[in-house]
Length: 318
Ligand code: BDR
Ligand code: CA
Image 1 (tube, rainbow, N blue to C red):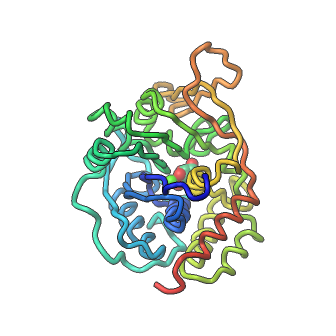
Image 2: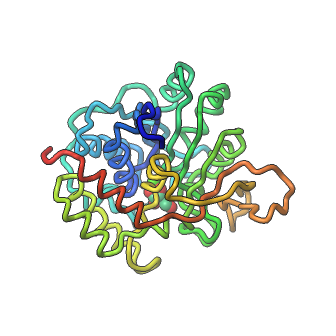
């Protein structure tokens, strides 16, 4: 981002989730660059009543209780809800050890708020999506005109290579492939940050200890979550939890830390074997126009420097 530019209007849609929680902290610790208009919660890693409460807990530890949190869709558009407690624990943010949230969620449904906010916006808004795309797809179906006011949608989801929930699919896209299909076909400026990138952003023991050493409540909470989350990952993916969702916020703040290329990406919605696969046309075999900026690499040391520097700015007491 350019120095001295106006803060970028941003909405985060998420399903916290330890890595969602860390992404929220990174965004809330960056008010000079990001004008966080609100946080929408969706069902995903755990049911909606937990994801929305977790978002509210995280805003408190980040010292940003004024940021509005809206509860959205409690299930995917077509599929049944399949949550991920086996990775995230019963609460979704096991290891965080955070108190009850200080105040409730807003009364308005996240999808209604998204539509109203995008329609009323003077300047186009960036969307950062960290979970299943249900809320965003519902908003696009109900009010297709909002697409004009979305400057870019940066999502964590999909993979160029292998999946994590199935051999073919990544969790966020697999969870609501029909929603992903709607979003990928909507004509938006899309940047996809898939598993190929996020598995390069691993919280190795040295990186984790550097975060713990910051010592404020937010960093202590991040270290606790990564202890839990890393332990769930280790048997399948090896040491060092991948920080999937924080990569989205890091890209918005520091696109220079990433590299990728434009290509056609389609979402598999019918095959039982590969449902939720992001079919990435790397070698332009389909002859169809590119619709996604697919990121492939991250400078991980730079990413962890940014994360540590921002976490250190969060309150010393809560
Ligand atoms: C994605 O799925 C969830 O487990 C994480 O929060 C992340 O958004 C990774 O596949
Ligand atoms: Ca997530």
